[in-house]
Length: 204
Image 1: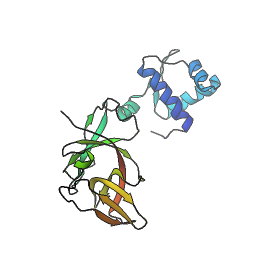
Image 2: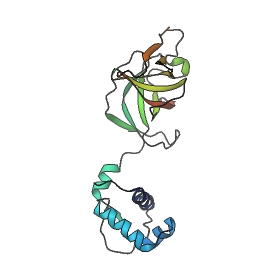
Image 3: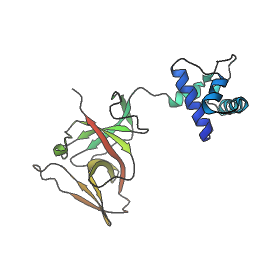
């Protein structure tokens, strides 16, 4: 499927939101919503069909998403659970979606967020226990002292992160266990910040 322009994406999202409510919009309604001429809307929908996002169907309100587009974008409700993250010693986090977990929108609809399961007890003083699930918002930048997830030698770990001038500091939160703080030289190929933790929950 060909990529869409920003305007085409907006129109597609609007049509999709109306179809989800079982309220297919007319081209006149789309034109009014975006303050466009009706012939401009006709052209936009024509492009959406040519690029494979919509299907041609007769009728005044017969806009339909294509089967190919639905196959690509429709996912089970919830955030994807991706691998396992270690809060003790890092363990390999396989980049495979194991399942989708419905958080009920508690942690917000941040695009691209995912869930990792915590293994280990090095973050218990921060309220993150062994077996908990953390919600991660993808980002390569994080405020000092924020809890985040990094890939260290291709293995994922959750820690408090401090970005210094020369190094990246990974600080545990378990005074009783005396876990050691890790210092990794900034710019090293074996470390990458992959996201900040925005929430934590556990299954009962």
